[in-house]
Length: 232
Image 1 (cartoon, rainbow, N blue to C red):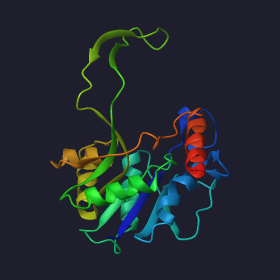
Image 2 (image 1 turned 90 degrees about the vertical axis):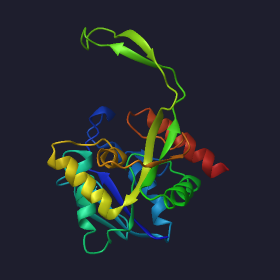
Image 3 (image 1 turned 45 degrees about the horizontal axis):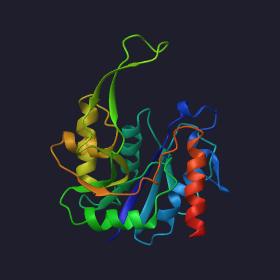
Image 4 (image 1 turned 45 degrees about the vertical axis):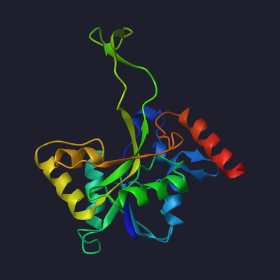
C-alpha cells in the first residue's frame, strides 16, 4: 500500500521559548523535524513528502526527495496547502498521512499499526493513547495572574489523546478541510475535520513515547526515547 505524506511545519512555536521554531531545535545530532521525517524517508511505500513551511522560512534545508510549499496561519491551512501541492499526483481514493513536524519519536511499529488498521477502514484513522491521568475542570475566571481552582473532576473513561500520523483518503480530507474553512472553522487535527463532515475515524492505539515537542523540557524526554530505542 502506497501513501502520500503531508507535514505541517509553518508554526512559530511561541510556547517553546526561543526565536527558532521548535521543529528546528537540535535533537540527538539532528533537528526535530529531521527525526519526524525519518520514518517516512525510510519507507518505500511513501510516494511523496510535502512539508508546508512558514513564509520566508530559511531555517531548514529539506533532505533529498522532500518537496516544500508555503503553509498558512493555522495548522489546518498548512495541511490544506500541502494537499494542494499533491493535486495532479494524488488520486481521490489515495491514502494521505499527516504527521506533526514536532513529533520526532514515531516508531516503525506504530506506523505499521496505523497502516494496517486504518488501511482496512472505509474512513481511515489516527494513532491515539488512552487518557490515563485524572482530569480536572478548572475555574479560571480569576485570570492568568491567579492560580486556577478546581471546579470538578471529569470522567476520563473513553477519552484518548490524539497523536499523529493521521490517515485519510485524499479526496475526502480535501473536501472536509474545504468545508471547515468555508464555514470559518479551523480543526485542531484532521480527524476533527472528518468528524465535522460526518465521518467516524478509527482509533489505533499507539505508544505514549510518540510525544509532541511543545516546551524545551520535552526535548529531554524525546532524547531519552531516541537513545533508548537506539540502545535496544
